[in-house]
Image (cartoon, rainbow, N blue to C red; front, side, top):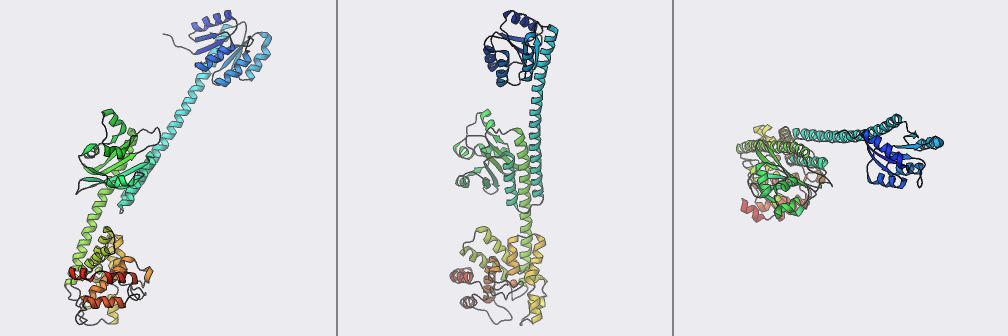
Length: 505
Ligand SMILES: [Fe+2]
């Protein structure tokens, strides 16, 4: 079968010419359609694709010039050749000025006619190819830009993961970057709870909060639980291909449209799952997206793993320091068990105040090491049975900032620092080490200053005869409201049921 060199529409009112030209061009492997009126030619141009229109100029009805004009309006890319006798050469030249590709004079010089026809079709095809190339180039440009953005986004996550000390920030960054890559309206990051073996939402964007709060995905149960356990990404198209129907809970989460559930795993351990739903119109989750987001989720799992190790390490540091403080206090009658008691008082008082669990925990652990700075104070001062001299007192008063100096390089929880450094500040600004006043003193430090003083008053100190009863200590605290202690907090401490304190002792 010979190659079709192009589709030509030829309009002329002379049936004889139509036949001759048609036969000639067919022999030359062109596909030719002939019509005898301009109107018919224009109709055909609207309904079919042609590579060339050849029109006679002098015709009854629409003239060749009118056909040219209207043909350009219908499809400007189809070249038009006008055919004319010598008598209307000027008209033909006008036609070229008006957009005709060329003109041919009658009677036809067939070789010249063929050349012009071939050139016109070639030019049209080249124009089309250029257009396609340009479009491909634009697509490639866009793809390249997308890839660069994705690589950049992944680089940002890697950097953040490398510098991790705050898991929440990393997880938030991962959700943000997943959004930048996919523009999904709803994104949730679920973390695996090792104890309950459930995936629970940790951070999200979009989605119905109430629905997410109730959401629990048990590893190995249901489609998502199984997928998480098998560590397989799931998309809408995968479900359709496998003819899988979602259960109600899964449908509530994933909806009816495109979605992507991606396990977050690393070295065979499942850390969580990334869920994305409601993509922009026409968006299809393809292998590219899954690949990029898989790298992202890998980074997330490294971040989670690092964070867990970091927490474990911090716990080890803290436990060591707590043991050190307890040992230091045990050596000295004045302070035996002090930090442990302060820690318990702070825990119970902060619960009484309605602090959240995480804040209570930070306070409790901070109190257990609040006097860690005393390990650099000579024992002769710590255990001195008499009142300290001014010089000794100055030395003793260095323990809060020396404690902070010990903790900072260890990267101990930042929330603990105000307790260690500022638990001897006074509301009236006469405390140490920073002489902060009321509003300047961190809340945690103000709270600990009360329970610290309460324990100091109610336990034996060798430089003081006996100790105060709890009632006397509370009266002393009351007398120091607005001077040593924050009024609001100390009033609350006085309300903090003494029975609870009795129960604890
Ligand atoms: Fe202290």
